[in-house]
Each structure stands twice: as structure tokens, then as C-alpha cells.
Figure 1 (cartoon, rainbow, N blue to C red):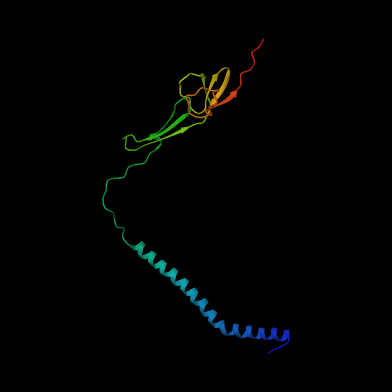
Figure 2: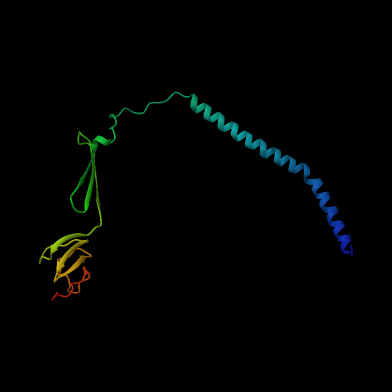
Amino acid sequence: MPSDTSDAMALADVVETVVKAAIAPLVLRVRAMETAAADLAVATLRERIAVVEAREPVPGPPGPPGVDGLGFDDYAVKYDGERSITFTWTRADGGISVESVIRVPMMLYRGVYVVGKVYDTGDCVTWAGSLWHCNAETTTRPGDGSPAWTLAVKRGRDGK
């Protein structure tokens, strides 16, 4: 058993060299087998693709003819004058109809508050000299402490 550190290092180098020399042929064979396996897989895949490409196409079962899609002639846009824009796609033969509505969030002045009228989100009304904004659909009166209304512009003092 070597007692000196340099002797141990020299022994370790000798063992490493012997092991590397012993397994070098095995490493070369494994690398060659990996390359051969990869080449075989590519060749097999190419052969399979060639066989599929050489086959005659097989027609599917007969069925009804397909329906044409929607085009620009089938498209319409309608604005309701307030908050909604409606996009409609309808085929001339009535076979396909698709409709999509977009509501634009914006404020609309509805005049003086009317008792019992339904107000929608974004509506603005005048009540007691102030302007109120509606936060949610409601029939409640502005200024009653309801969360459905927010004071937008407060009434000023009367002039002299």
C-alpha cells in the first residue's frame, strides 16, 4: 500500500490508463451500433413512406356533396344606434347562419330620470340637478344610496 500521496496519484493514473485501454474497443463497438441503428431506422422509415406513396388512393364511401363555406357576400353588420353591433353571416340558401353581438361599453345620456324606467349600465341621467351614472341594470332612483348609481357631476349653487 503506497504511503506517499504522489505514489497514490501515480497508481490512480496507471489504473485509469489500463481501464480506458480495456474498454476502448467496447466504446467503439457501441458507437458503431448506435450509428447503424439510426441508419436502419431512417432507412426503414423511408421504405415505409415509399410503400404508402406507391399505393393507389382508396376512395371513401359516397356521401352528399359538401356545403360551401361563408363568404363576404354572406356577411352583414348592423348597428342599433346605441351600444350594440351585430355581425351576421347567412348563406343565401339559409343553410348556415351565424350571429355575433358586441356590446360597446359607453355612456349614453338618457335625459331626466323617469320613475319605473329600466336603466342599463352606462346610462346617465339628470336627477335633482346632478348627473348620475348607472353602474348596473336598475329601476332604483339615483341618490338613494343604491350601488347602482354613481354621482358623476354634482349640482352647483344657484346664481344670484
